[in-house]
Length: 103
Image (cartoon, rainbow, N blue to C red; front, side, top):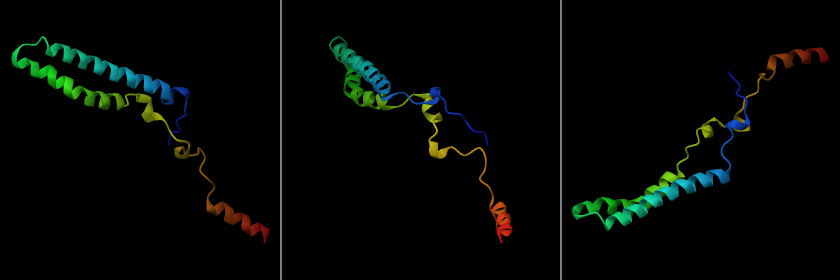
């Protein structure tokens, strides 16, 4: 079994950095929504349905997209309880041999 050393590059993003990334994703999606609302005024005929649908449904998708984690390092983090020792614990047979010497 291979023991993986945890390093600083394996750590997840800080909460501030993760929040900043989510706010950027959400702001971009809301900017596209504003463009959809403005384009409703200039698009002729039945084509107005496309930006109208975008303006209605983009807030939902913006929240979903902003909350999806894209940090590839997140899957590599190991919790201390999951790390196995390098040397296996002594077996019960070695303890039985020492009992015979004491008697």
